[in-house]
Image: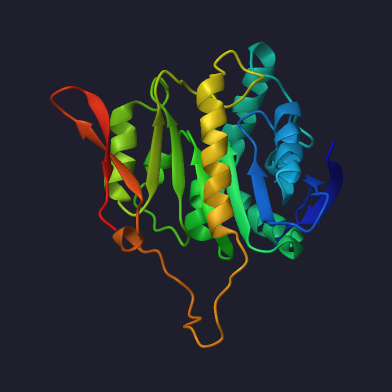
Length: 265
């Protein structure tokens, strides 16, 4: 079980967060961003899971600006309460809280961010608007297409569900086309919430693969620098297509299928 702590944003707002440390020296630090349902049992489990993987992990209670300690389930009145909080949130306020959360785990080394559902949208916006992040893995964020033209400051790997009713593949293709310097994974047969084992939409095979890919991505980008003193230490920039992409997806308009296209490197 992660530890409950309090954080303060730059505007003086105080909010809760859940933090877990690895058993040894951290590989890096990870911000874990909630779905539309607050920092509930599933999100706290993910904090522990990332700590077990070797990361200093923290999940900020971003809904505290609307309602304190929101922790709800996925159906009925719980779902409606979570959706209401999500709609009441301001993205600029969320970015202030992400910045405070980033600072709270700076001791863990390079910091990445990941999130699902609403948290996927926050993870994308943070990659574009918050400095000091080394990598981002947004998962099926419903608002990402609305902000597809923003410019990421760090490497980004998107995870999408093929049958996600809230994010049709044509919307995913819009994001991919607007962000050729990012990585996209589409999971066949997976719908919205496919990584969450507390939801009926959980797709075990896809969830395991998505986790493995996220860990590999963070392992690459959060690793301690081995740059020689004689080498160029200028910060790397990732403006659009300048970032090397290992793979991308293209929609075959004739067959309605996605194909993986390798890059020559």
